[in-house]
Image (cartoon, rainbow, N blue to C red; front, side):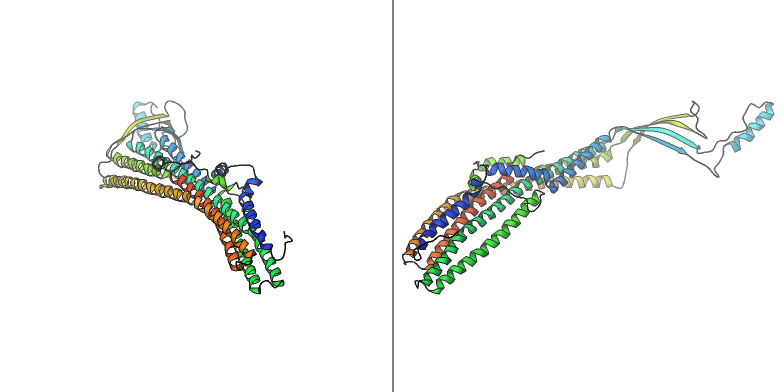
Length: 463
């Protein structure tokens, strides 16, 4: 929109235009939406991302697999029951009747009676064999080690999944902050464009009236062209940030993203350094993963040591066998066995496996100590970053206020012919830069708060 202004005093309106434009840029979200705070909005986006993100879905599948592994390990303590059946056709096998029938015939001749059968037909193995078999382990220390290993694997998968969820919660918040900051930058630059358009128009009037040389107009156009380039680059960054944010949500690239008033980003609870560090050491998933690694190493130790102990099991079977299927007392076969096995020597393999398990446990313990130190370092750096960013908020506000006042003074001097166009454009650039710096400072503070939230594990995650 253009205004009809006096040809030589038009510049006195430019500070009002720029100040109003920037004020609209900062309050656009607040006036266009309900008063939703940034925390509530980000919590909603985190919940959405955790439910839809494909990487988290993969981690959930891995946890489900680990849970099934625990059930499998528990099942090894229960009896196994199976049905085995065989029916065979023979060729060239030994028939016991060929040896027994002649002997029985001779006996019948000696006693003069047909007391013994002479048609025995029996082959080994029997033509059919059908039996129900049961096996029940009574003592096998390796089973206890395997169950402990499966549980450690499950805990490790669960901690890995929670760690991925915590990282995603931070990523989705930082992606939203990145997108929102680029939107605010685009708005600030676009609201500045009418000021430069007005400056070009006024410069043309001044030249037409003989009050300025052509270089004034050239500088005004160059300033406007530079701003247009900045706007296009800011739009590119905004679109890239939108696509990245929607990727984490598993949504289409062009899905709209809700924004809120920037001032709500600054409402952050204050915690002491010791409190956030203690919370991190108690809740960080990396420490849980290290603990699961130690438990897994202990389970491997037990499995390796179980080779020095005997294994005891009960085996029983019941069924029928013979040349054909007969279900009677003469064809029934039952067997019950108490089986013990004990490996006396295998070339030192068991000792080597136990030594490997001991080394694995030591490695896991060192890894846990390393993780504790790394987490303490992360929390300390994140805490200091938040405090530093908090202190810059006031500085950024002061810089914007000072740049606004300086621009107003330069404008008045320029309108009275006491300031050059270069001074006017320099003051305008400083004003716009201060406005963008305030946006960046606010979002930088919010981003560092999110990083502290991740480092200290302050966000409660769903199961």
